[in-house]
Image (tube, rainbow, N blue to C red; front, side, top):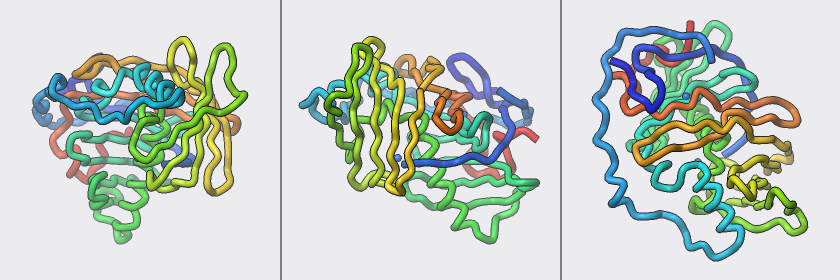
Length: 281
């Protein structure tokens, strides 16, 4: 019985290949692997009509542009109602493979280094979990769980930034003399958010579509780079369509956050089984 998604099935078929990539900040086309597992039943759909907004007041032009970007991504309720999120992350092709239970915080990240398959299982709220190498608990499990949590923060931000500009701890301001006939620019800074709160992001919001078409990030470490956000892909969630960019064409590399899925159900053991489940052989 497969994962059920708006457009594809994923439980008896999952995807993938591996490479090493370069993480940067911040908080599923490829080889098929067929595995025989049962699926957890889908959770009851969120009662979207009873969900209260968690957004701050819209006091400034920068706030309004951040709201425009969130709405272009599908809107607050569409984003919050996704029960699971699955995506891959890497330079040019997948390096890490993610599966996230967004209701409980349970998380799975898989990657390959040389001939070793790593599976890291943890909870994003407690940051506690266990890491495995080729199905056996790793001697440095705690260190690998910490790295897995960092990968979650970094990789999901590359995917979800346009929908996170109104998150708590994010400060927005317009960038003077940077707007054009097609775009307005918002500067994002942070307080006690993510692993590198000293980072700053400049986001070009398309006046017509609301999409974040480009960002220029300046890291607290001193590194910086611009990226064009492209290939916005739409998929159905319980509360309506969600649209996310799968390709970031950057000044130094092309970052892929692709194979994005919002399954309604996941395999049994998705957040407990130490055997690779998302990666191809």
